[in-house]
Image (cartoon, rainbow, N blue to C red; front, side, top):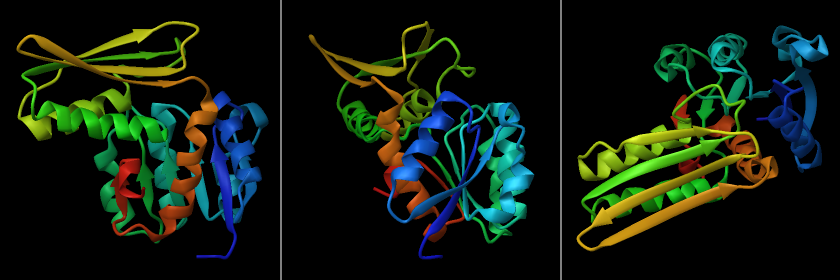
Length: 223
């Protein structure tokens, strides 16, 4: 790994992408060397020779081919886009010098919320998830909700229903409501701005070159 990591951002003109660019520019040991986005007239292929890590905040249709292009070039990739088949990356990553870190949510509080929900699912009879996002989010349920439900099912052996809300004015919010005999427990996380995701994104960029496995899903594995 280089002393300074060169970072490119795919989807750099989007709201999340632009926030990631600012965070990388302000982070010690990282340098922003590429911005790929159709709105900027720059392709991913153009920036790949100049980067060590690509952060992808694009769309479900673009994230998989972007990641495959990164792996073919031996470039590490951090993916914040959800709604595509993650298994398609496992063989290419195993054959590449690049690693993949996929995080359904980069907010530290959201990672803790998922962990607490999985623990609570062991002890209360039933649970449901309500996830609320801005109306421009393309996938439903969200990757965070799907990941939470999977962790809860693994812990309890029970499926957890998910309800999705898409409205203007929201950023990213999730409630896990658990019920038992005569009681309920609500675990809620709110991202009030996109900056809430940046500590996790920067941690992922720094960690991805030295992952213990070629593909890791979940920010909790590096915290």
